Length: 338
Image (cartoon, rainbow, N blue to C red; front, side, top):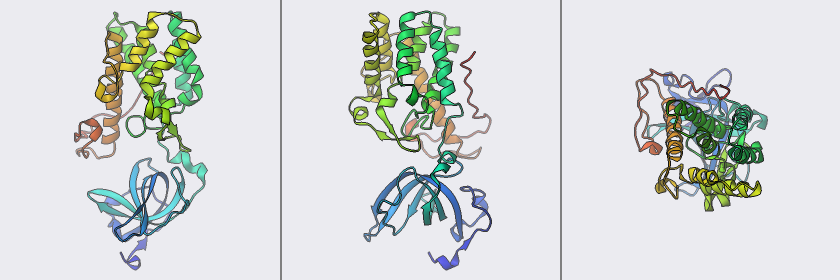
C-alpha cells in the first residue's frame, strides 16, 4: 500500500476502533498505545520476517495485529506496552491492525490494558476466609482455611484460565466467589444440601490453578507449568486436600468427599475429570462451575457486538453463534458479606 496516499488522523492518540465505522480506515494512520498479549515471529511466503501478534487496546479488548517485514531480535516480548502507528484492515471479516511503527512505552502503563475483575481479589479472599472461619465443622474449617492461607498471595490475583472464562487478573477469586454465592442460594432452596461441604468444594475446586498456570508480568496466564501439564489442577487440588488432612492429623470421611468434589467438578472424562460426580454436593459443584463459566463466556462474547447482532461462532460454546438482544445488563454482583 502506498504510504503517500495515507494521512495521519489529527489530534490525540485514539482508542481502538473508536468511531471507525464512520471512517475509511484503510486510508488513515492511527496512533495509540497497546499491550502485546501474544507475539510470534514468522516468515511470509517470500521468506521475510514478520510479527504475528495479539494486542490489547485501551478498551481492554483483543485485536490481531501484524508488523510486516520486521525482524524482532528480542526487541519486543509478551507483556510489553508499546506505542504504535497502524492502519486497520478487514481480514476475513475481522478487524486487523497493520502496524507500521512500534516502540516501547512506559511499562507502568500496563494496568491500563490488562483486563481485571471488578472485585478486588484481596477483598474477595478475606470475605471467603471469613465465611470459612464461621463453619461449624471444625475439620472442614481447618482444611479449607489452611489451604487458602498457604496459597493466599497467588489466589488473590490469579486468573481462572489461560484463554477461556475469567482469564483476567483476579478472575480466580471472582469465579470462586460467584460459585459460592450461587451455592448459598441453592442451600436456601434445598435444605438437604450439606452447605459447608458444598462451600468447601466450591472454594477449593480451582485452588491448584496457581500450581497449574504460569503468569507473566501482565498478571495474565502466559502458559502452563510442567506440573500443570503432567498433573493438572484437579489432581493436584485433591493432593492438596489429602496432604493437608495428613499434616493436620485429620482422619475424616469428609476429606475423601472433598477430594472427590475437586476431582469430579469437570463432570466427565472428556473435560478432564477422572470420575463423575457421585453425590449431591459434587453434582451441584460441577453444574455451578459449568454455569458460571458459560455465563462469563456468553457475556464476554456478546459484549463485543452491538445489540441486534450475532457473534461469530464460539468454539468454547459448542461452536454456537450468540445473539445480543440488548435486553439485559452485564452487571456482575457477589454479596459474600451477607
